[in-house]
Amino acid sequence: MPGTVSLCKHRFPIQPPLGSFGRPGDCSSCGATWDAVQAELQRQSEALIVGSSRDGNCPHCTQYRRLFRFQPCDKPWTAVDYEEPVTFLCMNCRNTASDMDREGYLTLLASI
Image 1 (cartoon, rainbow, N blue to C red):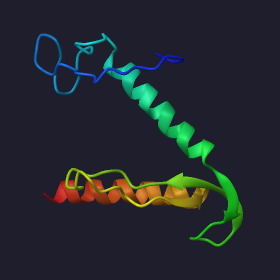
Image 2: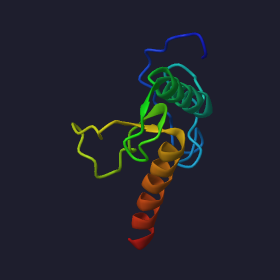
Image 3: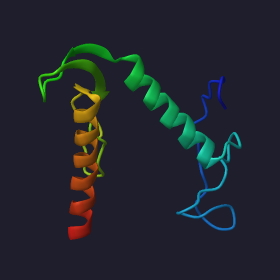
């Protein structure tokens, strides 16, 4: 898939024998594997983060550093038309914010 543009609206089967919920099968339209599509989405996400980086003062720690895009992950309860706010943080603060976002979500799921 690298180097190509896919306009496929991927459909991964999750019912045996073609796949399962934990291990979806290949796309029924284009044949792309679940892992290949997830890797491509991750690559695109990382390219957006690095490509939009810039120098400046981190709004969290106030240090002058390279700032990277941070946007909290969508949660199951996030409204369809709502987009989480984007901030630009230094790498340390971005990693901390990402960890806190993930931990808060997992803690909430565990309490249900």
